[in-house]
Image 1 (spheres, rainbow, N blue to C red):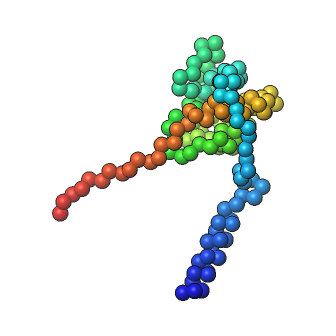
Image 2: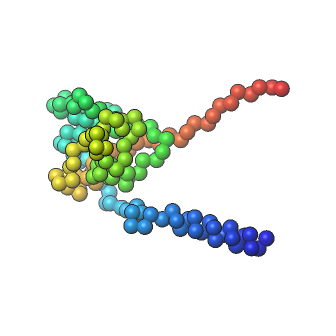
Image 3: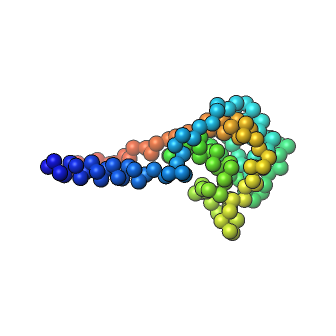
Amino acid sequence: MKYIMLILLISMSLALYSCNKGLDSPLGFSLPKGNSKIGERVFLEYKCLACHSLKGIEDSSIAKNKNISVLIGSDKTHLVTYAELVTSIINPSHKFSRPYSDIEKTSEGVSKMKNFNDVITVTELIDLVSFLHPYYEFIPYGQTKYQYYPQ
């Protein structure tokens, strides 16, 4: 019994150690607190509404891209982290949302989103993510309702 516990402990330790992504790990990732009001201005200034929609945010002066309309925010069954939002902005080809994957990437598999990395400042990025993050609400999977059949 003693050896089984030891083997189990070693196996669990190795499994947990292998979960570390090394240099690609988000461990320790942190940016300063942003200003969501300024983030909203950044969102409108960079004309994000041309290709994205965000509940409650409208600007009729921004011309809509008729080929792309990607919803930002909404209820999600997985937790959308601050780091994921930063990554989505600075590396939009990293991951595609399922319902939009066909319309938001080119035939080469690259995101159609304009690269803002050379124009957006770090402060603007922090404020933009601070503005967007509250729009994502985590909704866990609902409890399954089984019909009870008496025997």
